[in-house]
Image (cartoon, rainbow, N blue to C red; front, top):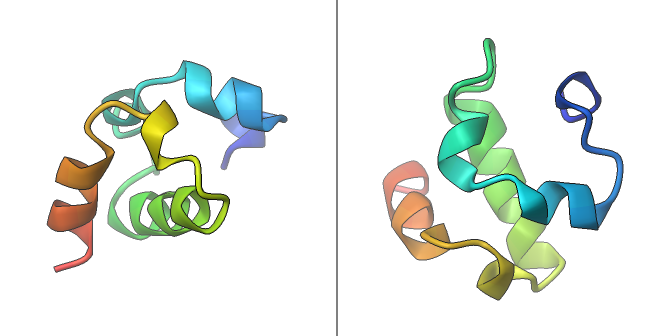
Length: 60
């Protein structure tokens, strides 16, 4: 899914606001949950505005 939206590096990932991922066709609940887990695993939460809001929504 990330290659479909031209994200190949962590820098590419951080350039796109989290809410924009939801505008991509097919990038919904499960994809968002997985990307949030990845961001948390890489410890780069501070690079994403609204990360904690999205985590609360998709991890409940």
